[in-house]
Image (cartoon, rainbow, N blue to C red; front, top):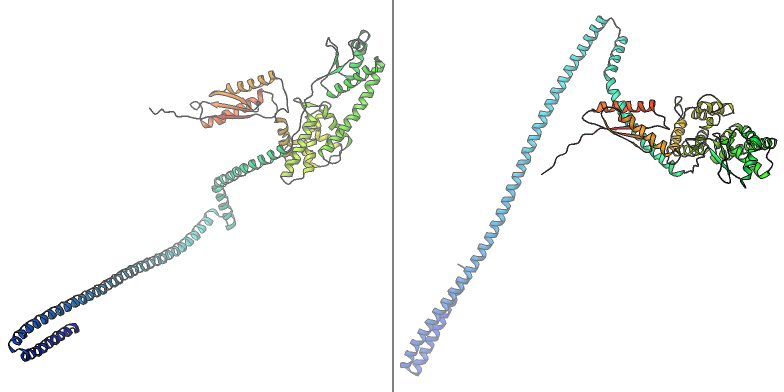
Length: 523
């Protein structure tokens, strides 16, 4: 029994005892005072005490019940908490057991798979060893039979097998070589474009195109009669001595000197200027002045060659070569000054050689002398590359690279030196740049029309357009009439026809474009 209940009962008993004692004491006292009233009072006190005792008993019972209820609730809460913790622990243990079971099953599967793989590997190894032994036996048998049939020894049989293998792999080798060549070609083209662009950006030159006529100013129109002389003897003597044509017309204050040889024309211009300034114009004086002027021109040509050599920084050159260089100042090609062109080629070659880690001085020497033959091509037989190489070799040029560049910059000989390639590239750049070469508008338009007409005459060609100043021909082919292979063939035939039928500077790129288009409209 709980202590609270015990204490409650004891309190009740003590209360009853106290009440009884009080009642007895009162009765006895009442008896002393008033026996009759004491009895009545005692009865009331007893009744009151009993009621008090009952009230105390009820309050004690209520308190005991409340305490018991609280203790029971606390006990239930503690019990529920313990049960919850126990359930959570059981759940965790069950989950851990499931995880361990899964890991165990997975480990068993891996072990079985590993055992199966090992067994398969052992079986495969046994099979391979067995097949290897069988193949070795078979090879020995076949080799023996081959020797018996072909009567070849081992070295001969190996040679035969290697030749057969080379034939079988030739296609694959060719494919690999072609892929490598394409890769190298693309890489080389990109690098070459970078080198050319850098060289062109680092160098720029101005070109002046000489004409075939020169004008000489005269102080008055009366001088024209003195230039002509009596019955034209002065002008005839002058033309004979200089090799030019002197045109005296109605143009006021001007006499025209005409010649295709720029040196003779320049000599005649200077001589005529001296005669006009001197005032003495007669055959003997004309011959004397022309001779003096020719000697001055020779010295001037040599000085021009020396200055050009110094400007190009190509090292020492023979005087004859310097004189040929000076003569190039008065030589034009497609209205382009050959000396300025040679100087530009020299600088471009040097810049490209420096970009590629080559000898810049040697490259500039090759570029400067590449057109040296044009100074004497009217005096010797053959093209200017061959003439230039012969003259350079004759006058002490010992460098094989320079001689080969002079002779091979137009692909007249097999290219054996890289400097020749640089000279050819620089030559094409200098000749192809805008403004380098000049031609009349009528000739230019006619050449473009002829170029387009040649391409338009081929079957399957819809349009032909000459672009980039006639250096490229863009041909539009009909996709319904020409296949891809036929377009390639047509492109080659157009190029051959241009080579055979037209005259043109440099080279012309022919591009045939064939395309198919599908058009639909969403309505």
